[in-house]
Image 1 (cartoon, rainbow, N blue to C red):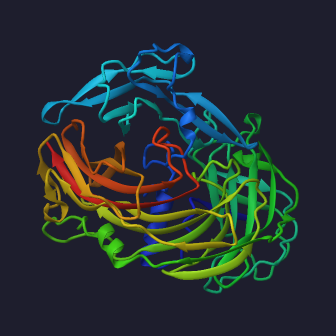
Image 2: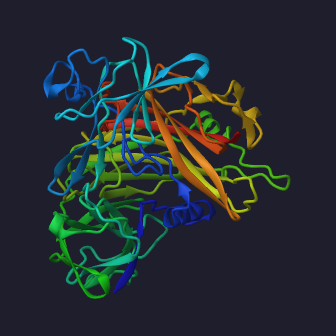
Image 3: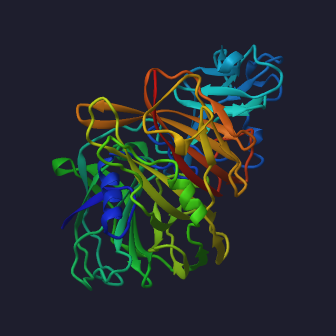
Length: 529
């Protein structure tokens, strides 16, 4: 039997809003809201909050690695690749680092770094002894800091030598054996599914195969998936297949699993050298209460983007949220980083109390992730008639430590944003803005540890609107405004995030955390000339 896997894990009930959300997932035609500690939209890297005590990894403190002892700004930058094992492959940053020092009239003085030392540290001369600077890493990541020794390392799932692939490829499991319990047909509750993952290949997908109700023999299954990277046994990649079965009217848990390596068989399919499905003990108990998204949070996430008004219609948010609660495996104990292996799921509307048992065959802890997601449509000028979707999320992440996970509350995003001093609500769609651009906001509730500003460019290609990621700016909680470096002429929009990471260390600001919140809002598109 052959079934189609869908990359991503937005397992939501099918109605107009969720169908659009699912199509966005399948087609890739939207920029996704960033998960706390999750992948940067369009940037291909993963980042998150910090961890208290992580400053020992920062590049400061002495002459180790050959840096000048009088170096005024020390920057350490590695990418930590989480691979199968579990293991971590640590790769030094290959490019240079720059410091942007505030100058006159909203300008920046750009200070390049020295080449990295053997220890992977960079030194930037010419920065003042105190005050905030923007440290630029690569082409699109900026971190504001007042520290003079900072570690801008990042954590991502997948090998550093992954090879991309764009075609649909099958994973052939020749002998899955007996499904215990038998397969259940859809009864309006959570859908049963298989979850397929590989840490080394950065793969995370799910499938809902067509099986008769109560069927107990899965036999051979070929699961088709569009994967961004090749799965390679010679590189140490391992494939995990988790079978999620209902254990309540609204819950689904991993009850069986198998794992193995792959080879390439007929028609490019991966033959998975895995045995029959094995049972998973349902020995972990969890309960929690998820509070509904408040009216204040709902308004703040929606109010500042009225879509576009082209004289004929107005497009904005689709009017409501899609809700989901997932339990993700964290075999590296690295904090919440997507994509991962989905081990359990709860179907929700808004506001729910849940208690159930689940199983997890993978090592390491489990993250409970509650998401409320909304999306809107942006339209480029210059003749485009087809819009693109962009989304925002309000998210709560809790490391599962005790049976009672407590109350999951959804925090507000940055409030009252302004662009060049004007409230966002008062700006028309595609208003013309002068540079330097200053975006500001009021401090969000919920005790954020960081803010993030993402810059997205809109381009009309024929009648299509295309969105491209320009850059992201990470700021400490003490900063509620940002002067953007000069942007080339064009059409841009912004996504603002309030992030709380627990614990957090400002010396390692991009390190994932096991607990936290993320809440976003949008600044509607504008024109820079």
